[in-house]
Length: 193
Ligand SMILES: [Fe+2]
Image (cartoon, rainbow, N blue to C red; front, top):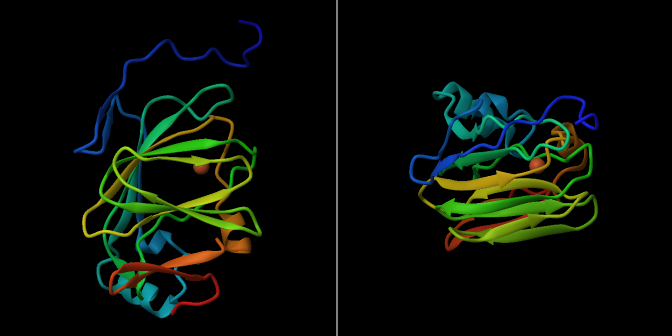
C-alpha cells in the first residue's frame, strides 16, 4: 500500500438511476446556471437577458463519492436541460484535462452531442442512450443537448485528470451547435449564425 499517497476507497456498490439522474451513494452535486456560463455562449446580450429572466439552470452534475484523486476512477451523471441562448443550444462549459487523460461518456437519456477540440481539429459525436463517446487524451470536450428533453450521460474519468475551463475560453471549441429547423447545425466557432 506504500505506493499510494492516500489509501484508495474500499470497493463500492453504486446504483445508477438513469431516470432520476442520480448515483447512490451520492457525492457532490454541481448546478450550473446561466450566470455560471461566463464566456460560453456567443450571444452575450442573450446571455445577460437570460440571467435577468430567472437565471435558469443549464445543467447539473451529480457525482458518486469516488474522489478526484490520482489512481481513483470517479463517475458523474450530467443532465443538460433543453433550451438555447440566442439560438446556441444549452451545453456544458467544456474543459480540457490539465493531466492529459482519456474519458468515456455513456448516453443515458435524451439526445445530445459530444463536441471535442484538440486546438486544431473539432470532432462531433451524436449521443443517445447506449452510445459511448470516447474522449482521447488531449481533446477538450463539451456536451450539448440537441433535443426537446433533458440530455443525460454518465462520465467515467481518471481522478488525476482535472478540469481546465479557461482552456476553452482561450482556444474555443472549433464549432458551435445552433438550433436549426431540422434540429441543429454546427457552425464555425467565431460565428453565431
Ligand atoms: Fe473531462
